[in-house]
Image 1 (tube, rainbow, N blue to C red):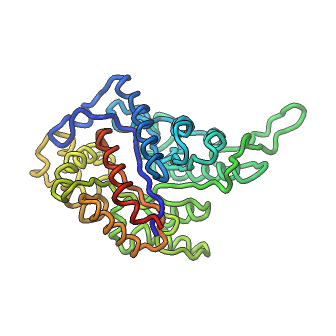
Image 2 (image 1 turned 90 degrees about the vertical axis):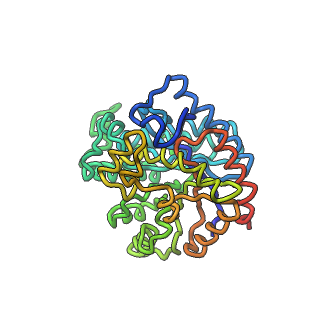
Length: 384
């Protein structure tokens, strides 16, 4: 049953225009003052959500985005800051991109955040998808096999460091500790200082390809999965695949257990008004994500069209309505949303976490209004 409501704020500024007829994504560039404004925005979002009883505000780690879409490079620092302004709200790392970190620096920094926020920082790891980010930090992403291999070894190290008083590691990419002389002896073991005090560490990872290898790795380490809303309509999609991976490991999970379903949403007095308000935001989302391979069903020609102003219909670019049908996006009244979420409860009885997110580029005033509406007219139907 759904008991926890969260959202993702990826760190977008208030864009001056939205939609297919607005500024193309690659032509956007903003001042440092504009880009730094996302931190004040995150403060106001966090304070409201804390007051309204939301469970978790998920933040996204990204770098070098002068386009203004995702402008938070360090989730752990921001989580510590926001915890000082709130009382119960948790802050999710959605996600720390492990290939851009040394695994022990990531483990140390998370441990500090766990201690300073008194357990209100939720750990999360991802492999990344921006070549500009990952490759700039010296890690592979274009070579997906190399990226996965590196990521898996890093996560192994992180959990060794979390879960053991002392540890060592010998792998393809890391030898920890190096066998060097130190104060009269040769290093053989390391201790993470400090270790997290909230153990075991709750960890999340996005479920993208839902490959057997990836899901088996998640289950092995007890990593929970964040799934896009389109999976809600897939009988044999990642939700079923995650349960099957757990079964291979000898775990009997309910369908949806240890998973969080994400849905982009917009509420209005009527469905028609909600669709009209959501359309330019969906189109802005498409401009950002289609060239990165995250707009399912688009062809190369359609992705090229998305990079230009207008002309999307002539190119056959998928419309908002196509994704409303899959369940990945939602537009309607609060009662409509309650009904949709109740249907998900019936389909996935083990699922407790729902992630309702406003799309990329949604203005701050609209975000705050939408979150308040959900808390007043949707969440009470799920408070048992």
